[in-house]
Image (cartoon, rainbow, N blue to C red; front, top):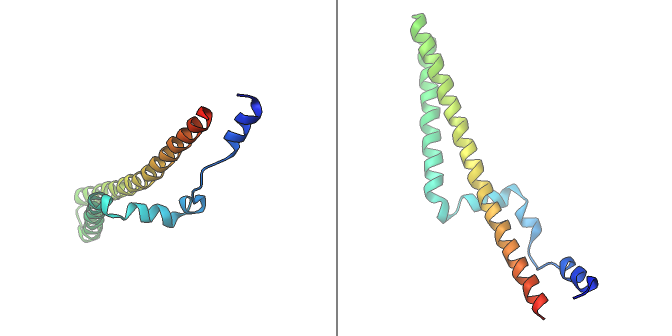
Length: 120
C-alpha cells in the first residue's frame, strides 16, 4: 500500500450528521430520554430537596434572633447550595458521557471502515 492510498482512506469520512452533535439541544435530548429516566429523576429529586433545604434554612436564618442558630442556618444554606451545584455538575457530566460514547462509537466505525479498505 502506497502513501496515496493511505491518504485517500484517511481523507474520506463516513456519513454522519456532525451539526446535530455539537448543539446543546442535541445533548439535552440525549439526556432526557427513556434510558436516562432514573438519572433524571435522581438529579431533579435531589436538586429539589437541596433547593427546599436552602430556602428553609434561609427563612429560618432571618427569623432566628439567636446568633448560634443563625450561624447554623447560614452553614446549612451554604451546604445545600453546594450540594445543589454538585447535582448540576453530575447532570452535566452525564450529558457529556453520552456524547463521548457517541464519539467512541464513531471511532470504532471509522476504524472498521479503514480496516475493510486496507483488506481490499
